[in-house]
Image 1 (cartoon, rainbow, N blue to C red):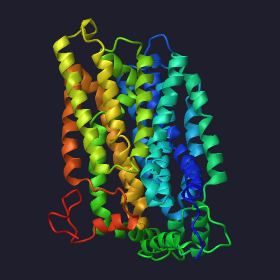
Image 2 (image 1 turned 135 degrees about the horizontal axis):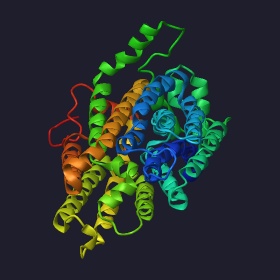
Image 3 (image 1 turned 30 degrees about the vertical axis):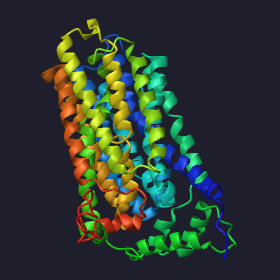
Image 4 (image 1 turned 120 degrees about the vertical axis):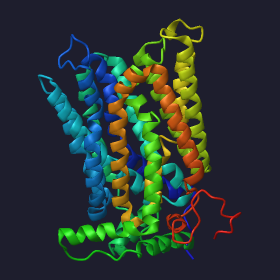
Length: 489
């Protein structure tokens, strides 16, 4: 019997590949954070491409209209051509979006076009990294790896905020530097990332799947697969066998019917409903409003320090917390982290709302001027340990392999559709509700979100992808219930 490689040796290629796959979402984070950097100079009367309040809200949100299109395109692309192809398609789109921002003269139409193209890239990037890591990593470390794309998004937000603080009014310089990231990421992807064994098995390409599995587990190409790793590979084969390999070309209508048919299974539609509801609460609890309007939100909350500096502080908190929680996910369940995250977000939003209501219009004269930045920082910290990270991470592990691309595309489509409405309505909410009302609203949504995850969110920690799929099979108890107490199997 062949001896399995040491745990450290086995993890080396997975960690390297995980980093490369996750880094493909850094441009997404930069795209999300860019409005916060650019809106202040763009709404100034002394700048080229001046935007009024309505145009500014479209600049911040219009990217999220194109993102769902990228999500829907991404799903079939991943299922038809593979996870690696999805990763490789990102660089040209992101680069084009950033370069369009450099056009002169700047006008609302050209700025909107650039944001639409960047949004399309964000949609294309929304699924491949999470699915790749969910399928490539073994279950012992999968919890940490599937969180890495979200951490990379936080890294992108942090990077663009730092550039904004350095260049302030020079938003074109920020766009130019951002354009350099996607090609470098694509090169790393091309050089190091293999196709996932799971996708190859669903296509009946067993030899290639075994070769990919050996590479991912750092096995010599000539030795037999050790027994423990052999069991893991056989489990992948069993899961992939549920969907016959595709053969030949079929018509578009037939292909669509084949793609959509598995969504009727409880193992597909149940997690689809649960995860989409999770994303609804994520978006309307204000997480990405803080990202997209960070500088404005900091000023709205009455923070006394420089708004750009405060935005960098918030991005730093989010990034560090995301890194920490990615390691926590190897030992902590999804539901406890989600409940803790929602509870913290609720507390911070309500605290900030009460503070602004009590302190009045000029909260900067209050004796507790430290409270707004503290509350916002704790809010960012709270959402980073759960609501900002976990929904994206669960895309890569909660859906059956045969529909993971399609279901992931639908889920991210809905997530960014919610994102558009959350971003577009923020200026209106700020005007109609006032600062306290905005934070009361986000706090109320966070409270409802906490109740939802406590009742309905499934616990996927420590389970194989096959075991997760079986949780939603007919006759099983509702995820999140006490299975032992109710006598469930």
